[in-house]
Length: 295
Image (cartoon, rainbow, N blue to C red):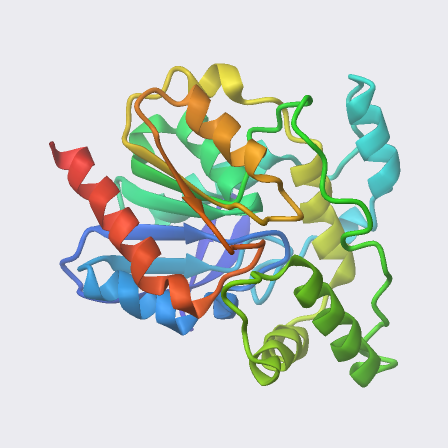
């Protein structure tokens, strides 16, 4: 796969679809690699005419890993943030958004339609706030605005430790499957064999738990963005699952309520995952948003 340099980071990326299509930049969730986008989603975006860009962010996949920054105290950072204090973290969501802007510059793309999922939705909000000229339209999937009054995840979600795959690969897969089931979509089940693949392929490609935690720390200590969202003038669509146990749907509604003219799309039966069955739905929404940007 090709690589580019931006913001002091080497980024692994892929670009597919019609070369003359409007660029659609995909920003994934915490710890997710570019290979973890469902191929059905990519194909659907391409059918809508997008030139689709996906990438490994810093600390993830085959992009630069900032090993010298060590393993942050995640709970200490979250608790400090909750008290209104500055969290001691290696980098912030703003840094991740600056990476995205730099990536677009390195690819020679003046602006793009942006679709962000989970942490990617948080990063995309910072991107449009700090680099508004880079974003033509914004589609945010299962994310939140970091409103401190938003409801927390359902109790006991993601609380069980998963074994280190270097010591217990089968235990790692079993723990991952349990996690996937806890946050998955009740109406759009994903076959177990595909979930096993979803656990094993990224781990075998690039396993870095410290990098994952550094990314997670940035997301969990992100500042409240509602004031910035109220200033936006670009087309925005917010998509959220009614049954999302990790980021309750109130988080998505809060984003939509604070972006002028935003559309809110509630999907019954969607949890906090990426069901292949929703490929055409998401692609058509992203295309609708792109058309609104031209109007």
